Length: 288
Ligand SMILES: C[S@@+](CC[C@H](N)C(=O)[O-])C[C@H]1O[C@@H](n2cnc3c(N)ncnc32)[C@H](O)[C@@H]1O
Ligand SMILES: [Zn+2]
Image (cartoon, rainbow, N blue to C red; front, side):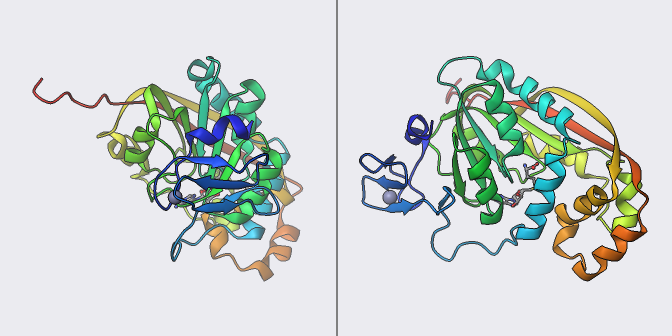
């Protein structure tokens, strides 16, 4: 329930504790008097000041992601993420943060297994409109994960990051000691069969090596699992794939009907994921 979760949050302006206004769940207030009203769809917007220069996913990119995921093609991944999170969420009062939650699809899979306190963060309000609908049991907040996160130190047991940007120092700060960071990244060859057809951007070959290296200062790698899903995609979902990824920012929308018409009724596609679990490094004790 959001009311059990609010004590994990900090005001994005002054970093004081937040709470809901008396008798309602639609306004968050800090002790210094800053206040944040929920949007009509139920999410909160914590982008303060001039916001961010980041190009957030647009409404049509988010709609494509939601449509694709609702057809179940990545359900195997959702199950695997929930399995990986399970040991750290078994306790009562456990809490999870999904950073770059998008439409909230993977957070839903976790909450269907564990009634944890939950926070979803994303920079796209279009994504959070859907996430707030799918996960009313979470607090969904528009914010930039490159900024200090609006969560208290040691607030959560699990942080999940599924194809989304990583801020290792902040993830380590908001995890309790012994908590788990679960990162999902694509492996080389992911969706290779359609990359050419749809104009999707290729994977950068050095990306994998960079994951472990970029986490190194703040986290220890505990376990890695490779997951391959052999998909048979209808044409509409090949188009959804093109639109929902980073290439969706640049794709010529007027070419999509022709692309759809040119595709076979089914295309075999391999999805190749890596799921890595990390534990925060213990801070070193001065003088030891
Ligand atoms: C590829 S999508 C993945 C979404 C979701 N995790 C999923 O797998 O369905 C990447 C998400 O990261 C979000 N994102 C990108 N940069 C961000 C930032 N700086 N802060 C917060 N969210 C960000 C995007 O808006 C988008 O929803
Ligand atoms: Zn404040």
